[in-house]
Image (cartoon, rainbow, N blue to C red):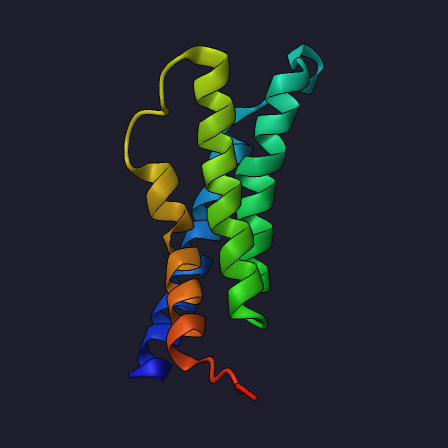
Length: 114
């Protein structure tokens, strides 16, 4: 079962990465108009989420944590800046493999106690 969820997370992360890159390329972003908050949000989503999903292939706990906490930080900064949370499920759907990576690590990690 562990192997199944690992491959679900990996395949989902590939789809998420492709989706984020496609959204970013199709958006034709003008970086010259961005303020500091826009750059901070960009660091968290998509950069932090993408980095976490990619890193999760090798180190599930670290990669999953980076993806999930980057998404949470993005939501927090967005809320502080605009007063509303981002609408729609797509941010959560794209970062969800990070949750799976963290769950895999939690259920498969054997901590030695002394």
